Amino acid sequence: MAIYHLEAKVISRSSGRSAVAASAYMSCSEILNDYDGVNHDFTRKHGLVWEHIFLPDNAPELWRDRSMLWNAVERAEKTKDSRLARELVVALPVELGKEQWINLLPEYIQNNFVAEGMCADVAIHDTDGHNPHAHIMLTVRPLDNKGKWQHKTEKEYLCKRNGEEKGFTAAEFLQAKAQGWEKQYQYYVGKKKVYMPPSEAEQHGYERVNKYPKSTKFGRQNPITARWNSDEQLVVWRENWAQITNKYLDEANRSDAHIDHRSHTARGIDEQPTIHEGYVAQAMERRGLIADRCEINRQIKADNALLRELKAAFAKISQAVKNTVPTLAEAMESLREKVIVISYHILHTKIGKRNITDYVKELKANYESYKVIVKQISSKKKERKELQKQKKSTPVIKVITHRDLARRIAELTEEIEELKSEKARLIIAMERTDDKDVSTVNDSLDRMESALAELDKREEKYTAELNEALQQYDEYKEQAQGFNVGEFGKARLDIRSDKERNALNQISNSYGAHFSRSTFFSSVRDADMKLDDDIDMRAVREYAYQQRREAQQQRNRKPHEHER
Image (tube, rainbow, N blue to C red; front, side):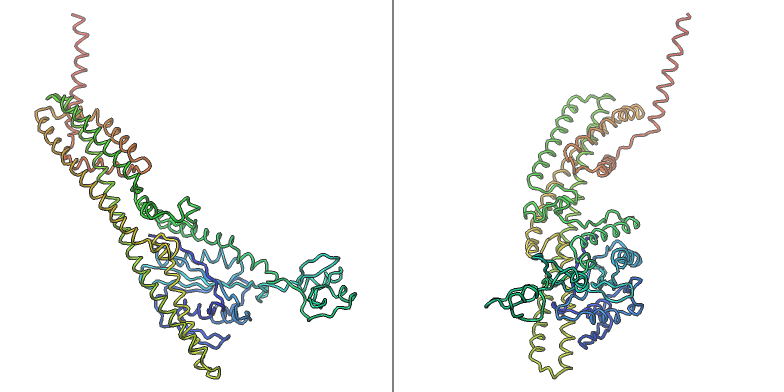
């Protein structure tokens, strides 16, 4: 079943990652990182389905080579904690095929990222045929019209004029200076260090502490970068992913697999429902079953009341049954109505059991995969920590050893990131919110098993009711053997539509919002198959024709009698 999963990450040096290593990993290729001299070779990695580079019109054509692109990114970033790239990991719907994925992704990437001026590197992974997903790496520094990197942030000097303080970039200050604005520097005022303009300091003869002017802590962010980094923009990207995925699902006639980007809260679902009424209940509700304990009890009471009502009505009819066409037709059609109602209960229960069983199987498989991945992440983190210690203790002069350790640490980091993404997908697939929430899976499975046991009991009860009704119906069929087939069939057809309408209304009232019209029609067909008593329509038509003919002859005789 398609699930919504879009995970946004930032690839930064502070987290131990590099853009070159991340691109090499996801494209299963070999790239040398010019920044630190480490060669990243992931050519033996499996699972790559498709990869491609997307560039805006103002980007250098050389960047279609991912080695050139991401090394250009690495060169542009100077600090040890630089943000190098943004990575999106999206789950691809299993209901679509490779060709559809390859059409879907470029459309999404072109409209949402390349059109905004970002370079994009994308790869589809599917190692086992059950978890198709795509990695989308995006540049975070805008390009100018000539294909040169713009700044992400600019130094913003806090300047002063007539007691007012205002921020200016270096370019803006050239004009502001002519208008009387001055940069502020630290000066010694007694034992204190105080920021003030040079003109004010000169009046008091203060000594300047250093040459560094006062500025804002983080500088002024490029408005394009600010928009790309905003939470609002991420919401737009998430929504657009759901929309385009659903468009392709519609084209594939799989609108039943639509995904929804909205949070549980936005959809009116409790974000962290209780164990008793939470995941188990929601899972059963989605599978057409009432799940809340109180609601189940109310449903059982409603079912029992309906069956008692049918039994009472039928018992009344049975007591009055005489070997006449009208009374026996009424009894048999009333019994057929009862069989339809019981068949609906049985079908509804079987559908629920099948869906819950499938859900339990899926939940167990995801939970086992989750536990394996948690162990793998822990193991790889320990290995990485040991390598980091080893690298730190290795003398700087051993360049080759340093690079080998850095390469292995980078490999482990990318593997851990991939496992984290898979773990996040599994958490969503299990309908949990975080790792702590996953601890409730066993409780949910126990309650699912209890729910299945309750459904088994309900099915047994309804089956016993059905067998009793079928036995009674066979007795009525024996009584009807001596009747005219056409006359008896017509008598039953005359009241059949009303009886079916009664059954529909009764079931609809009993199940409320959980009523399914398609299941009702299936229960009608199922009831007729079990009763095995098709009305002979040819005999009914012949009888009706004969009745009309006799009525016409009777009308014709009356004028002649008046003439005599």
